[in-house]
Image (tube, rainbow, N blue to C red; front, top):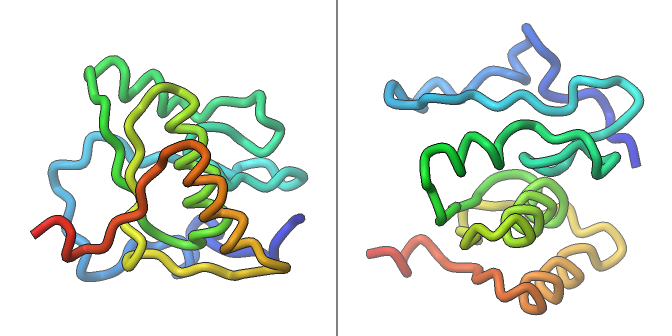
Length: 128
């Protein structure tokens, strides 16, 4: 499915939130750069062949744990968490920092997928 245009480069929809402060960020990942193919995962385009470079970036830094949050729980967060787990990373979804779209049971399908891949969904309070 191709979604309506969103997060278009050089528009306010692509801007980070004005309160977000991440001066320590070493990478801003770009995905979904081709008009004819959507991109849900932070790791691969939806053709399931074109990598974004994130796996290599994380492995070069010996990182093993990935915490995911965002929109949409049942699409971009799901595909990213699944790809992280398949690449051998320990993926954790911070569920109360996500929102789902829930098209035709997609949120329930996401939960089943996470369960089968042993991807935990945690709440912000689980980290305190």
